[in-house]
Amino acid sequence: MILIEWNKELELGIPEIDKQHKKLVDMLNNFYTELEEGHKREAAEHFLKELEEYLSYHLDYEENYMEEIGFPELENHKKAHEMFKKIFIEEKERYLNGDEKALREIIAFAFSWLFSHIMKTDRKYAKYIQEKT
Image (cartoon, rainbow, N blue to C red; front, side):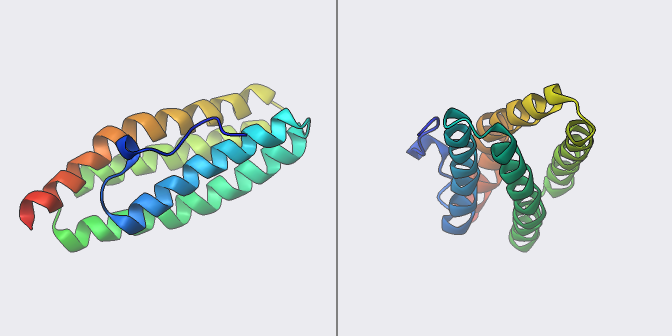
């Protein structure tokens, strides 16, 4: 079931990073599908595991990319990434300790990240690289 459809507004024009961002969209859609099928526990486990792996790989990749292109706002961007990781770790721990609300917080934050961080903050380095080339 599709909750979020990948579209041009989400694209930065950087193929590998767009591919990785699309993975976040797919993860949210898969989570929603599993929920709709009545598999809440499995959906949560899959989503948390995938998101943890995604954050580790994608954020490091993105930071390395920004360093390679000489993006001047790299340090601020890294701080935003660290905040996301911190929130994820805290909320995941709460969820694993039985707080169901924490899962909703993680999902809400992932949506927010998708539409605010990717569409606004990440756009800054995409624009920077376009202007530089």
